[in-house]
Length: 373
Image 1 (spheres, one colour):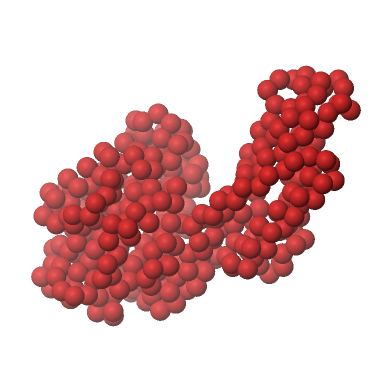
Image 2: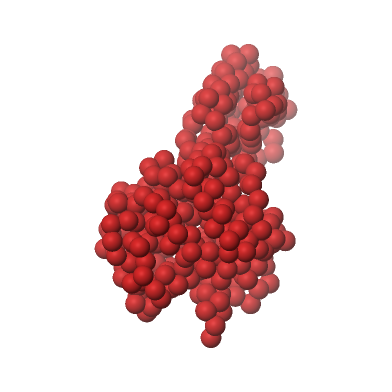
């Protein structure tokens, strides 16, 4: 079996057995088994799920990171290796990322004695709920590391394409829950109540003005209401309605402005309609900020190994890798996967031919970064 086919086979096995964030027990065991079978040493960090391996010797340490968790999505693709776990799917490509870094580990192992330092390869759990990076750091896996690199496949780019950027890249992710409490009533006698559904509907519309009318058009910001829930029958006006959504920004000042404005709108509507409106705010991962030096370096190495490189646009998605970059410098990159369907889609199907080239790229990147650091 060729090296590339081995990586694809591993990816397909991971794809058939996806596990949700924090539940990646079988995934962890598979990765451990493959690493140990290749003679790689595992580091004894206290992790419930996830694996960390290391190649080489010396004081210098460079880290590579893959994520291993899946999503609560029912797969609709028709691939023969589709998910065997109902309602769970690798719809974001973490199975691809894991296979890439497994390949990088094997390649580095082939000439371990010639490495000018150590490469620590992290297979991180719980990226999708933004808790895994903190667990990895708490376990001590970044100690001694001078720079860290990671990737995400990009369905909108062709295979053979590479993109990254220095500075802000992926967005800050905030989540909000707004609870509207009016007064319930019979649907035929709305004047006896205070209609929380009408109020919530108007609030949803008003929230769209935050990005379009309260923040400079030169700034990147998204405000999306993704859930509205209220009532349980057709002829009763419910007392309460709950809204949930997300805010994406790249600048801390804009983030603060958006939260302030949403709270002001909620308070104003509550006063105007004689209702009670409570806003809960949940901060997610911060903006992912690539180190300028390492982003430029990563691009140069990509060009040298044959990728078509470009400067990435800012991304409105969130990424737990941002937590690492708050602690140490490094760079996160996009590698084209040419899927007809986007990330988190039930029919998402990345082109597996990217895996071998990406593995060779990260092995080369880590080795050259050791010389650069």
